[in-house]
Amino acid sequence: MASAASEKKKQKKREKHSLSELKTMGQQLLTSRAHVNNLPLLVTFINPNSPPQYALESLLSLQSFFTPLIPKLPSSSSRLPDSDPNPDPELIYLTWLRSKFDELTHCLIDLVVSSQSDGALREVVLDSMMEFVKVGSAGMFNTAIYHKLLRAIVRSELGVDDIVLDMLSEKYFNYVDVRFFTCSSFEKLARTLEKEENKEASQDVNDLLSRPSIELSIQKMFKLLACIQPLEAVEEKLEMWNDSGTLLGKNNDKVLSSKNVAKKMKLKFTKAWISFLSLPLPLDVYKEVLVTLHQSVISHLSNPIMLCDFLTRSYDIGGVVSVMALSSLFILMTQHGLEYPNFYNKLYALLEHSVFMAKHRSKFFQLLDSCLKSSLLPAYLAAAFCKKLSRLALFAPPSGALVIIALVHNLLQRHPSINFLVHREMGLDTAIDTSEEKNSTNGANKDLFEEKPGIDHFKNEENDPKNTNAMRSSLWEIDTLRHHYSPPVSRFALSVANDLAVRSRTPEIAVSDFSSGSYATIFGDEIRRRVKQVPLAFYKTTPTCLFSELDFPGWTFKDDHQDTSAKRKRVDSV
Image 1 (tube, rainbow, N blue to C red):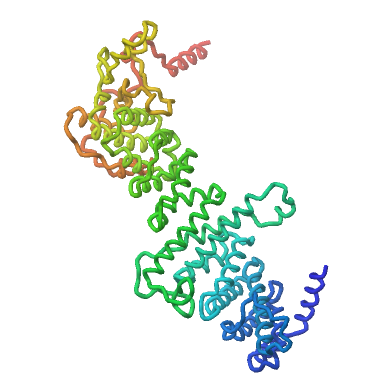
Image 2 (image 1 turned 180 degrees about the horizontal axis):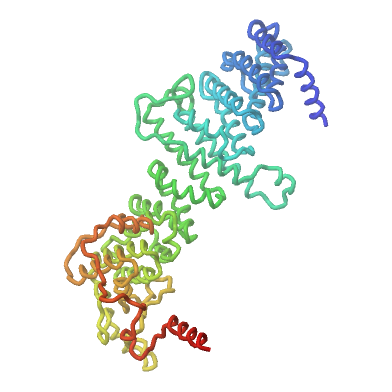
């Protein structure tokens, strides 16, 4: 009630003054200390409920007044000594100015995060806030004000597409020190959000409902964090926002070199991302993070192995999330020495029908080909992947069948030990020597090792490649694709089958040429294809039916038209 009453009093005071009077008070404040009492009144106009013209005029006067005084102001935590009977009047004056400056920054932040305020006014307010950050204490970057600004933006109800977020990233993230302290602030904010998420369920329900959505805060944090570009190379002169143009050392006693600045920036960049990944990410943010990591994050971390826990958890989820996590996990395994024992088992489990409709299927198929490139893979593992892919080709769209044929061809070229899958004669022993197994089994189990015509021993539903019995099967699915309804698939399957029949070392097929295919690309390729020979059909007489009786011996096809005309003749005769 008291705050509401004080707000009404301030509103009445604001209504008493015109815009010209407000401008006059600002000029008086800038000219003499005798009019310093105009300062609290001008601050009251920095309010989301004030008219934009009044707020803008007050802001211009206050910014001009405080900008030269900010380096001289004491810290917010400093207080006058109670034991001093004769305090310094100048110190009292500066302490009072400090309290009013803190009140001004609080009002400016409220105005920035208010979606009801005018957009142009909010842009001006943000610029003023960054100017205050620029001329911080002793000419250094004012981290306290900047952290309050970022925290208010993240914790507010502003949307992800708000103009303030775009302006902050586009206009100020070009400066190294702004990016550095943004990472530092996000590290603290991520820890705060994580603590709030882990609060006990005994918290008051009303407090939970009044807090802005944590998911919205995480979405805004990710948008700003993804806009932070790490230092690509060490430059002689780094572009800074604060007046000193440098980042100081730990004790603020020496200026850091460009090399040390890049090192500190990489550390802060790493800590910000690791802290952010510990938050409960919404599914849409989770997917965007997995796309961003391998593109613009991993190569700039101080220790990329720190992502292994997050990526292995993502890879174990399954489905689309695992497909998207594969790129980053593959980089850690090939470039940073990460060991993941169940990697190929998880990769095998990702081979499902849905992968052909995934948004990032092109990258997945290219990574799948790279993961299976090693010649040190066991034969059973290569055979299991060949069979699983071949079985999927029977149900995949034509574009997916083309990719599968290319993958199977490359696997057979890299692993000659599984070439027996191409053609297996019935009645011959399988590639696996099962004689010892037959001797160790009793007569009841002897039928398990007998080859029966028309039976495929491959277990398609098995998730463990060891237990799929792929070595006892054959690639009859690839032979079936030679009769595929899509001409590109049938032609490609026939050419690959001819290459494998020759048993010569043919070059591997570039999977990237087929991984981005779709119905549209196949249709476009067929239209642009030049056909040299066109099949023609010549009939001496015009056909009267689709099939003749000679095509189906023993069958008689009646002409419904003749029967109808005969019935009409009988009716007419009657």
